[in-house]
Amino acid sequence: MTTNLSQSEFTQLGSEKQIEKTVQALQAHGMLVVVFETGEEAQKYVLDLIPEGAAVYNSPSRTLEVIGLSKQIEHANHFQAVRAQLSTLDYATQRNEMRKLVAAPDVLVGSVQAVTEQGEVLIASAAGSQLGAAVFGASKVIWVVGTQKLVRTLEEGLRRIREYSLPLENVRAQQVYGRPSAINKLLTINAEHEPGRITMVLVKQQLGF
Image (cartoon, rainbow, N blue to C red; front, side, top):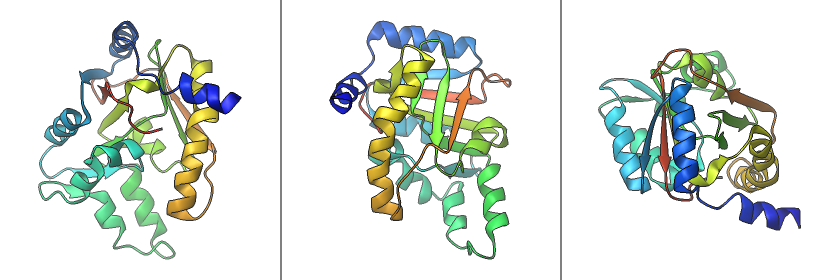
């Protein structure tokens, strides 16, 4: 019963009123916000935001995969794709080098699991690879977020992660990594200390978990 309720409760796109309220709150908390109708528009906008020659880390994200942004970033030739660099390193012997590349890229591109109407952003992770860059390490952070992820309160955002996002991510993790996911690390961003460092790209489509 809970699963069915969660499916319907957390897949509905945000209303115009909810989007407007959330945008105002995020902006008041030091984040830039743009709203697009489609993922295609969002993809083009994000690619245009990335400076020439920048080191760009696209964190694991179903949203980025769906709109084709992961592939665009990993095969770009006008900036450095951190994932391409990671693929040349050996996890057993070069783990520290891999950590450094991920922790402090010039640009972090990813998504989040929930955004509240009060302008709080929630990110859950099993390993936490993207969290350091999101908090401080990256010079620029860009999140692409479907408006079905907008929630009224922090409590509702936590419910969304536990009841909706995690079960779906579990399935993906089993397919990709051969092991289940978990909410091992949970980040809440209430505001950005450096105004304009974070850009939230809201899309009026159901994207990601």
